[in-house]
Image (tube, rainbow, N blue to C red):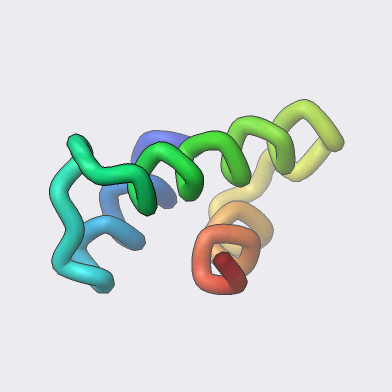
Length: 50
């Protein structure tokens, strides 16, 4: 779930996993999961907002 949202957004932005932007995106997704966002759509929305 979180991995799919992360990968999809990396592809959309043409980013490498080794960038600061990718790390910030991962942190945002982790925070969203900890706040209770558990569905693919919600995580995709969070990922797209960063």
